[in-house]
Image 1 (cartoon, helix red, strand yellow):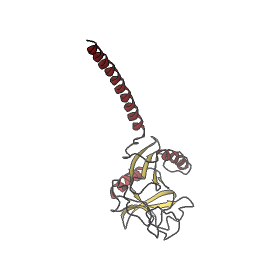
Image 2 (cartoon, rainbow, N blue to C red):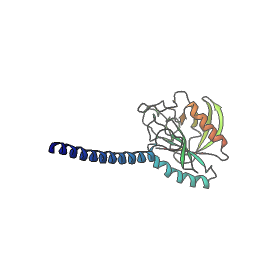
Image 3 (cartoon, rainbow, N blue to C red):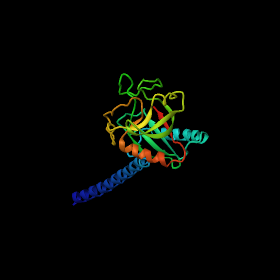
Image 4 (cartoon, one colour):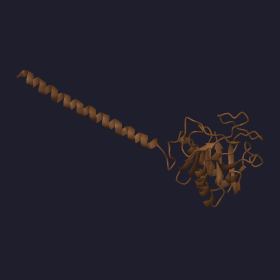
Length: 217
């Protein structure tokens, strides 16, 4: 009889402790889901951004610059060449809603050594990318189809026009991320996929004022 009472008491205590443990794990899981929801993604950007806080900092600066120099103050384009080429690192940023509208892959210049690491230069025939702000100028149909001429606005990219640095597409750039693999290189141009250029084309064409492209690392 005493043994039965002992077993009943043990079962009762075990049930209480098990319920408490389950409750604690439920709370922990809920907190984790809430935290993950905050950092998962923004807008229609697709994958989570590696450096989302940077975009906010650039947005504040670019909006001030756009207003002062009569550029579009609702949208700007940013290519973060500091991210791996296999990741989406070309962003269409909504300055009004402070969110990424679209993102895609973009190739950087190979340089004469054809390195996978982004090398920056403003020198003609260097085949390198150039950091800085660009005005997206006129649309034209060139060697790679639809393309946009770029006017360099900083000392780091003043030669962009004479270097024929343009925004264009090429078939070797995929639509989806391939990281940890890398993608093809350009000869200095910000080169995107054919489908992503169609998205960018719509954004540029519907803008009533010139759009800014900022290439950073």
